[in-house]
Length: 215
Image (cartoon, rainbow, N blue to C red; front, top):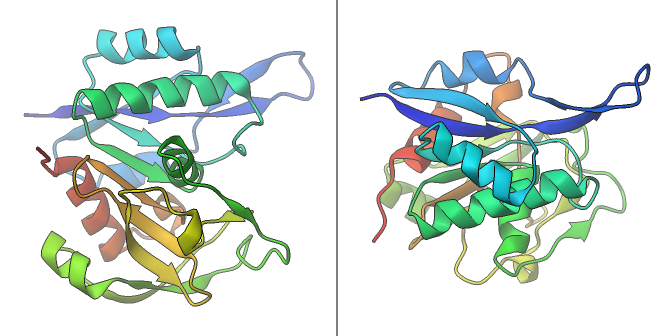
């Protein structure tokens, strides 16, 4: 049975018009095509109550919190995504966060972010190490991989929200991926959809994130 996933969108401002627009990168569609039995439905930034109503109207089964826009940059996106995240947690729907999505989940659960002073993570590919113990238990291949990087904030170990467990770390010790063992929340700091070819570890993490079961 095919399941429907909500896919959050960034807010883009058109220079030639006095209006804001919701947008989603074309990269998402070929990437998600690798995941069987899922269809993505873009969810507009229409405020907390309307976003949840939209989610229910389309009978969605899970949520991907996409990247783009810093937290606090657009209140309508922040309120829409926080409401959707709460709804999914309350109703045991899986959530997968990407970059901003990871940051949102961490802050929503009581964590914090640290700005990068030297921009070492912004626009620079770097190596990550997937934590062997939890990854093996989750059925995802461990090891070291090179990932893209576009974020201006990092999650240091003291920044991590209570209950979250690291899945991957960068060489500087910052947390690049995490999951919650009791709630179906999983997130990565890099952009798996932006790779020229879908990477095995990204597909494994995404597939597990969207099909995991929690009590």
